[in-house]
Length: 241
Ligand code: OAD
Image (cartoon, rainbow, N blue to C red; front, side, top):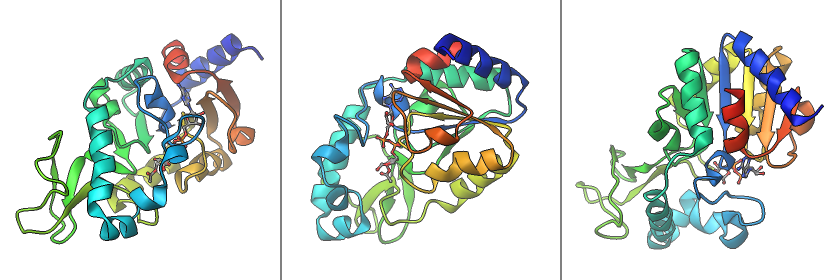
């Protein structure tokens, strides 16, 4: 089937869907200029995740970890949502029940106007005290001191989920509630290798939902999909919505 017929089919399905959801990953922000994690220019090609994005790394060298997050925060402070983010925000206006489950920590869905957003991996603009646990939004770029400190004296850490950590309970509960009820899922710009998000599409498909993948390339989950559209999220999503 050619891409325009696939887009037409997804458009019709989406129109009929009662509780559609989107699962998004780094690929949806790529066209805003945010680097992805895997692939040709992916962050984990040039940086070692275990030295920068684990609780052990933070205990060993909080300054190094913060330098990495400072660099990403600096980059993110300059980027804007793209046509893909805006198309999903538009979809929420048409379908009240529509929700986004994102693995991204960049906050771009909210900036585009989406309100039903579950941030499964946290948010880079949140800082949390590693000692007292207090959490707050902090958009300061650059930070006054690296690593920054909480008023209790403890070290502050980025409010994101690192490898080996539990996902935030509230976000996970909300996610499972959405997955139980959805009848159509759009899987957008995620490589489908990081759990648990990587198994969401197969879970909902087994329950009878229609699953659609939008990605530049095929992924390990492509073969489970009802429709696979290979292309840029910023080109495809506006046509679907
Ligand atoms: P990845 O970097 O693993 O994958 C990005 C995906 O987006 C790839 O499959 C690309 O083919 C696709 N892609 C790139 N540009 C695109 C575009 N313009 N339109 C559509 N697709 C495009 O990112 P994630 O799957 O989000 O976790 O990675 C999952 C998690 O691994 C991240 O949340 C992060 C990372 O390590 C943590 O840090 C805990």
